Structure formats: C-alpha cells, structure tokens
Image 1 (cartoon, rainbow, N blue to C red):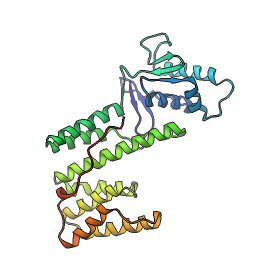
Image 2 (image 1 turned 120 degrees about the vertical axis):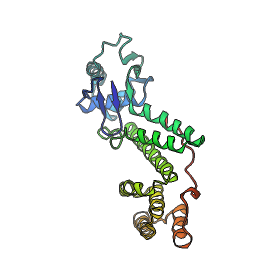
Image 3 (image 1 turned 90 degrees about the vertical axis):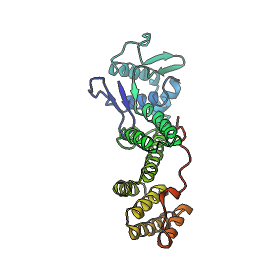
Image 4 (image 1 turned 180 degrees about the horizontal axis):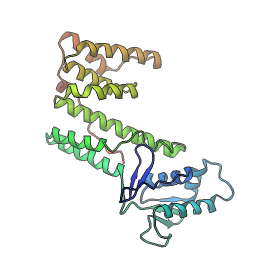
Length: 266
C-alpha cells in the first residue's frame, strides 16, 4: 500500500483503490505509526495521543480494538503474523513500512540526490528531480489530524520540508534562466506564505530578470509594509540589498548567495 501524508492522510491499495480509515482516532493512530515507522511506541504514548491526556478507564482495551480495526483496514493478519505491519512489541506496538511506500520516504532521498547533482554541476538534473518530488505534495501535511501536539509538530516539520524544497527548486530554476515562467507560482506562494522572505526575494529576482523592475520594487514596498504592520519588523538584509540594487545597477540571479546546502529532515 501507499501512505500519503502531505495533504489529508491517505491510504491507497496497490490497485489504486483508496481505503483510508474514516474514524478520527483510527487516523490519529495510523498517523502516529507513520511518524515513527519501525520503532516501538508504548501503549501509554499511543493512549496519550488518542485521548489528549484524558483517557477513559477502558483506554487500553479501546486501543487494542483500534489496532485490530486498523489491521483489518490494512488487510492483514493478527499480531503474531510476521507479515503484519502492526506488530505487538512490549510495551506497545511497532509499525513496519516494509512492503509499503510513503510520500516522505520518496521525497527526502530525492532532496539529498538533488543536492549531490547540484554539487556536481548538474543544475538541470537537480531541478528536475526536485520538481518531481514536489508533485507528491497535495497540501499541508496531515491536514485532517493536526489535533495532537506530536502530530502538529510533525506536520509543521513536513511543511517546512516542502517549503525549503520548493525554495531550493526555485533557486535552481532561476539559475537556469526560467524567470518569466516562475513569476505566477511565486506570486501564489508569496500570498500563501506572506512572512517567508525567501519567496519574496526570489519573486523580486524573477520579476527583475523578466524585465519588470518597477513591479519588483512595488513588491518590496508591499512586503515591507506588511511586515511592519503585522510584526513591527523591517525586511531582512537580503531583501533590502535587492531593493537597493534594482534602481542603481540591477543584479544577476547568479550573484545572489544560495541557500545553505539541503539538510536531512529525518
């Protein structure tokens, strides 16, 4: 089966048929297993997640029922079966991804490979690899189960993984001269993430190199006013440097300091 975490939690069988659990607590249980694959989670940890610190007296029995129901959804045998993804391992359960697939397991290796390709000078190859990885995202991670502290933290981690991957993809495409074709997507991202200066920086670069310098300056004024009104802060050094460069001498995207090397989010 394939498990999807970006967007709403999804579960798709090998024939393409969706079979994700409908009950919220079953989704929370599955999401916790996917968050920590191949590692034992204690009954107490799972109970804490399922009932947010206020478990009923029958919580242990209820947890066993939820695990049993999840096994049925996965179409697997009982806890003694080595073929089961959910194994009973004192003091709780362990979830094995062996034989299955999940979006983050595909995305993170592709990020690392893109970094290696860029280091070897293959900017085109790195760009294509990241672009394909980003297609796996269907929206904000774990959108329908952001209801416990652990899952909320994991969702934010994955959202940051997406955004840094997206920003790196844009950086590579700017180096390849794809300025005009990036403008629309960057405008959409700037609207969705108004406080991410990197997105606005790259939009200013794309606009300038697409022959729209006055629009780039208006964008700077907009982000400066927005930051001042919402947070009482000024734009960062990189944005200010870009703003000063446009009317004086212009700039080349290749002169902009790149992001730090991509790091693992495991």
